[in-house]
Image 1 (cartoon, helix red, strand yellow):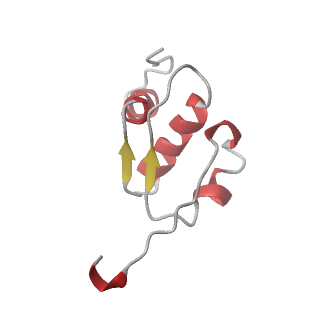
Image 2 (cartoon, helix red, strand yellow):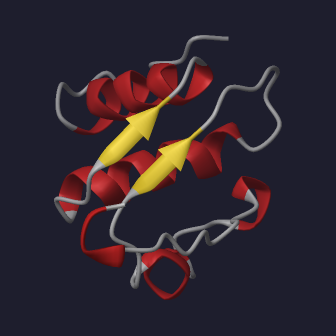
Length: 87
């Protein structure tokens, strides 16, 4: 890795992420990766993470469901489709 950079991974349970703690939980990260998943478990927390990344200009990588929730977040909070969802 150039310049001997390291990556410190901070695992976040999306079921526990909410509007009251999102700044505390994600305030010190330099990027957010939301992986795939299935069902409704933790989806609202994933959407919140995507919103936090967009609003704070933090690099975001969504894989599978992680990409879907970033589109849902954009549809809800930028386009005004308040009921947007993929499930």
